[in-house]
Figure 1: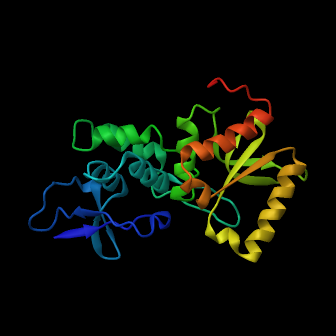
Figure 2: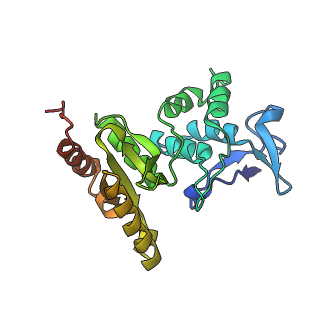
Figure 3: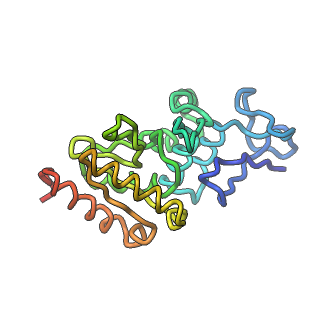
Length: 228
């Protein structure tokens, strides 16, 4: 018998099955802290679920990182506040305590790439492409301060070069969201920031295409590309 631990909304559509240690036929014993009850159903804790997914054959490292980003994501933006399922510090402590267990090494490898501030799997994939390409340090969910002293949160920021990178998914096609996006673009421009918009179609072109667009914007802002 198995139970499913519900994943954060950003992973809607993904379903990972883990074994319930309280059922006949279980394959792993759980410590008390590794299980909890959700709506009357026993499930594995978020940290244990992360470990189990990391140990699952067929799940890529990037998918484990996406899950980690989803679990630890938190921010207090007025329109889209998020509360972490588990803090990054707590998740790291759990994985450290699980050293030597199945999945622990891969979970630790994934955690080296996990960051707080990604609101979707595509935002995580975009950040990973940027970090692995040798571009300057990038900060997720960065508050650019506009001319009125108010924050404009951007998905990824190259602070030194004043480049804001936004991943715009399908919901950005609605008239209301386009109005808000235009206002965001104006506020960023007035604050002296250059914006690069990345879409799903851009991502389908591959990492090299996306990274190339961002690298070109960085060079225009004074970055000396050491990659040649």
